[in-house]
Image 1 (cartoon, one colour):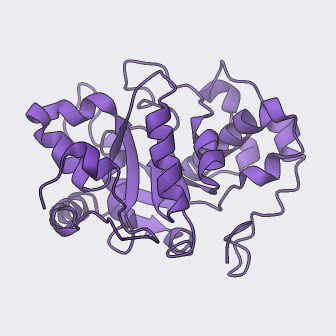
Image 2 (cartoon, one colour; image 1 turned 90 degrees about the horizontal axis):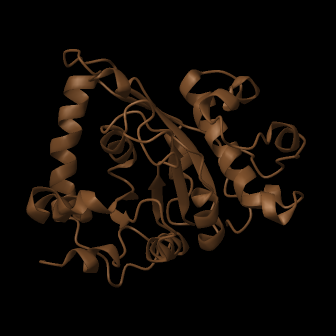
Length: 275
């Protein structure tokens, strides 16, 4: 019943092998409370949740989203509950909040830490192990809130590296209008928030590219899908140069790829390695 944070990081949560699974009681209580508040205050809705559900009990998947608000984490987690858990990757210092009590709570709902601005192999291996066990892993590849954090948003290849290590697809996602809840210098607002999931992206689709470009190109493609969902426009119209001015532009090579594994049919959505 009482576990250290490290024990919770390394236990399964809703995966295929549930022999050493973490208990659900605390996470379920937190879900009921947080979900009720978000529903009451922001009347949030979820689109294309069936894409996430299609992997349940079959294989793991990464949920990758753009990031504009602290509440993105809560909205994404609640959108996927109660049928599935998503193991969110969080900054290491968040686990020390409130004298460590905050870390206990977020660990109980499945979160685990990553060291910022470093190749944290412990976090990468944890994520890969969770994916191989059929669990969902959530990540915000920009690493900080766009336009609000102390750092500039950057495009990292970590999401594709985790997909490679865990042999899992990446599901693009977006949380719309959460950034409008609290803007600097303005009163708290209560906009209607929406969460949307996109078609899975498979690292295997990038094998035609040079090996050195595959992970970067896949991560670039995933983030373009996230912003296409966010802005409700075709992916080809997303201005990635403006969003990530220091990143390489992969539009020409990526748009030439067949993307044959991105079927949303009941037979094809699991892609390679699925049932």
